Image 1 (spheres, rainbow over the protein chains, first blue to last red):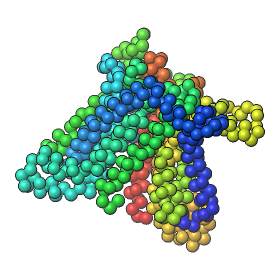
Image 2: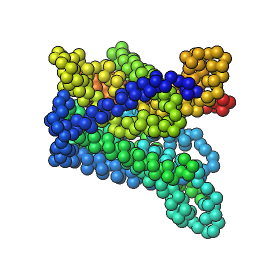
Image 3: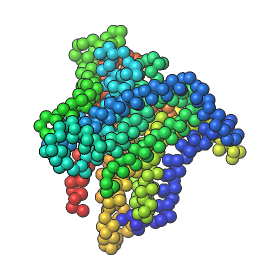
Image 4: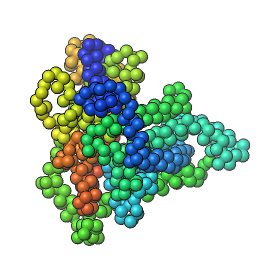
Amino acid sequence: MASQANPRLMFAILAAVFAFLYVPISVLVALSFNDGGLPTAWTGFSVKWYGALFRNGDIMSAALNTLIVAIVSTVLATLFGTLLAIGVEIRRRKGRFLETIIFAPMIIPDIVLAIALLSFFSLLNVTMGLHTVILSHVVFNLAFVCSVVRARLKTFDWSVVEASADLGASTVTTLRRIVIPVLLPAIVAGGLLAFTLSVDEFIIAFFTAGAGRSSITLPMQIFAMIRFGVTPEINALATLIMAFSVVALALSQRLNRGGLPGQ
Amino acid sequence: MKDRSPALLMAPALAWLTAFMVVPCLLILALAFFRRGIYGGIEYTFTLENLGLVFDPLYAGIFLKSAWIAGLAALIAVVLGYAAAFAIAAAPARRQPALLFFAVLPFWSNYLVRTYAWIVLLNREGLLTGIARWFGYDGELPKLLYTEPAVVVGLVYNYLPFVILACYAPLSRLNVEIGEASRDLGASGWTTFRRVTVPMTFHGIATGFVFVFVLSIGNFVTPALLGGGQFQMIGNLVYAQFLTANDWPFGAALSMVLIAIMMGLLTLQTFASEKASGSGRHD
């Protein structure tokens, strides 16, 4: 339908939209290599701000916290999410209520879950810290893992499972030797997605990490720094974080595609 | 692997979701109907005061303001996103996947970082000021950062890739022959676009609009970073009730109304797109 469109106008639209999308982040990346550190003047190429980053104790401890949260929540979410996906797909009857519960963590706005969890933990008098951030991150992470694994299961040949059972394999053996190996690319892709989401997640962590400085995650640290203005160090940190997310998600997509024949 | 095994497999995840999503969300609902304790905290007596307070002109004003900002951001994002999706769908078929990929790529990077990029551009010693100086302009630029337009631009910037994705799907499936038929019957390009293309891809537009609106009205980060301290949207107001003002029941009441607006719109949109995909089979 759009084939009749004026090519010059179409090119102008694309150029304008891509400029809008890419100029701000490109400026950020460029400035992180600016020796003088000021956005108003280019004084030469330098990686010194990246060095400064690694000497900054606050940033390093926040990065370590983020790593802990992301690893633990990813492991739990990958386990639970995969089992959930298999369980849901085995069931013949599709319950609307069940679908809603599984789908909800992906569409509930972060702020809602963040507030709900904050009041939940506070009312139970749970001391908040990294552990409460982990508990919270598993909620949305498991939903994302589940949806990635379920997509793979749509093309799964269940007769293989029946054959395995007929030949006397137990449920656990069938899972371990047949279902899990076939699903592995999707499980890894889902896990990678969960890990990235957890590393990037700010609002829920901000609300459920408690007041102590010791449980600050990297996005919380970035938020605090940004509020005090622009520094060349944040430019470097932002560039690294951005590069990480894009590479990890591209990898996740690629793995997932490899596992899906015909896509 | 039949009988009880699905339930067993699902049990850990469902238990987790119940404990850390369903129960906390129900708790918010309950909390909104209790009284605030004298020293903060909660007094367990039933009241409708909190909900009443939400409709106090002061707070209702903040709701309206948030809805205005969110509506504006959603409108701009839909116009830009639809135009971009249309242009991508008009490109040669072999280029479309790459164009779409690069349109969505920024969406994969960290939200805070994308918002921060605008601080770098807009602040007093930022890039725009630098460019103005380079052109020999020595005066002060008007204040750009910590303004309402800055918040709107930040929201549009962050959610635009999603709108492009939502609008591209129906646009790419659009049947070329219908457009040709419209032209054969004498409609101009613009009339065809307005009377055929837009109505047939409307659920993409609706999905994009609702998504941007819902995420913007409850947004907490962008107003805090690009709007400066004095700029308040509901998200920031809720945040203050829970973390600084210590009035949880009121915070819960605010959240409840916010959640009602968000969920209402999302349900409406799901309903509309189900209807659209149901009737879409005929074309």
